[in-house]
Image 1: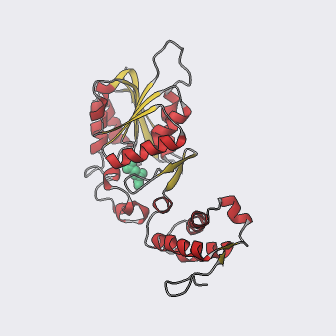
Image 2: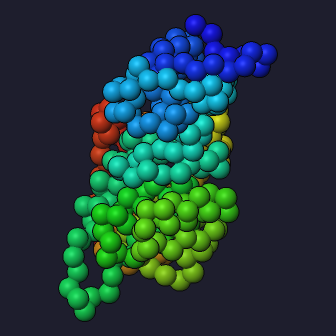
Image 3: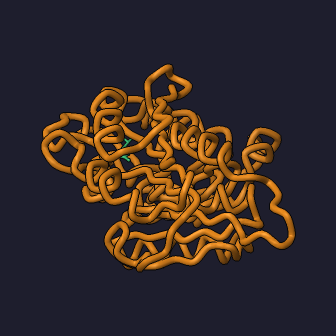
Length: 295
Ligand code: GLN
């Protein structure tokens, strides 16, 4: 089957055939060709994933097919599905993402889970709200997930990228979440003298020479959100050494890091005077999140 080319007038095609065609086309370039195919057909047709299966014998009109073909060409050139559709689901939240933001990863939900353990669901009426800072928020994924789960907490989210902050603000608006303040600035810079009960971050931590930076979806993501120095530890080092100045007594720092960085992160935490340091594994059984407390 061939889709309409620029010479031919676009013709309608059956939904199921479009999925099969895209699946075959993407087999060489994507680890998840059928999933990608389904998402692209949904995006071009406006159908949900469940409608897609129920309506596989329905046809997409010629114009829709042409739009679909353009999306498929972009994916064939390697562009991530999330940037093509402009959306990524994280913590069951539908988030807008752009090439100015990292695409939220499933393993980062583990960071959210670990952070939530430290945020009480309720506070006595007279107590001040529990305060959280999310540093390097990108699309806002972590801050938004925490805000959704703990609506009584007060969250500040920062990112050096003005464009990323605009995306994060838009996501908060779309989701009706209003307990986050967003500020553009480098890590702690926008926090002034404030002290927080919890600081959370998914910083860039990939080594500059990591070959995986030249492969797959990662090639399209902002380098500043991925890599940080030769060992990938520069941002983490900055966060760990400065966090004590911005943490209230008994405040927690919870960080995501690379699967082989747990030991280095532990050393940094202990060197900065933290206590109760611990590392947790993600669903792939990789050490992925470390936390520590100022006592
Ligand atoms: N976990 C991501 C990756 O390996 C990187 C995200 C990050 O640096 N925070 O692609």
